[in-house]
Length: 485
Image (cartoon, rainbow, N blue to C red):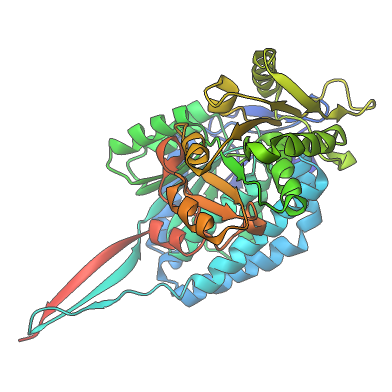
């Protein structure tokens, strides 16, 4: 069965130059349902030849109808795309749940976020302005924002719709032509996005999607001399390879990599408000989230209470197939399940505060792991230092602000941090002291935050996506100095 049987579009092909085309290799890759561990279709196995064709199509678009559009006209196309996504929310949610394994409610939230990204960048497309610079007599000096050209986008399997939306939406708004390479584990909604862009009226070549293996299609895109900017979301190891490949043709790269994000809970925190965030930010999408709050730091005066109340929530968590729409779905693959299970086994010397429950009727072949909460964890323990990418959280006690900051900043990552306290001075002090690209105070995630610049420091990467800042990342600044006597 081909992936097209699961969708309304030709999911077993590449989308290049405005058309569905078979991969040059004539080969395919299996589509697996993580909830059941069975093959349910096929997608194209794109290779370097398909990437070449996609880049050439993008270059033609830049010199053709796409490149001639005004910013306002690009915005109207993005607005139409947002409308079309909204008409397909339920279907996109079903495809994402089937492909990734996340509960339907999470798939629906992702589809709505995709629509919101396109809506946001539709409105922003004609709002990016340069500035005039006071200078020497006889000169008029100003700056322009111009597209890079062909941009490459390598997105992961955990949030295909959201991450494609935040990178492709901003790149298209600035007038770039895009080549999108989705992760081989979860391609279907990226292909759906291409088909909806075709329906919205985007000129041929403005958006191209080539599924395939990372070491084949992904490597070819990262190393392609025709790509003027790369956006990569994924692991630290692969991000380093992508950056090295792009460096050979001096292309800038935006890297959004891993995280080991903390939430620090002080004794004056509002626990009724905090508790849902403390747990949900660790187990959403089965913990397969770069910004997951995998470390919970708690001031010792309320440490026992927080552990007890988090444990009660953990014991109520239900794990099962995506279409059951429970709290937690399966992991993406048997390989990911094995990785997470090994991490949990390494916590044998720790105190297991609580685990969730895999429902009795969960399909036997599904990649299920019970959410696990560890307490009394030392900040140097491997489970408190390494990204697990599964539904596992550790709780660590601290005594004062200085120790909380030391522990929070005590990994190589720096993506997101959360802070729970009623003390306004502490909020400001720690917002500055925490080493992270985003700091949330008395919340975590701010409701998704399409408008909020996102990215990290250290091993979490560099550059920013989301919000207006992404428009700067996907454009180049030109300075014009005119002498007029």
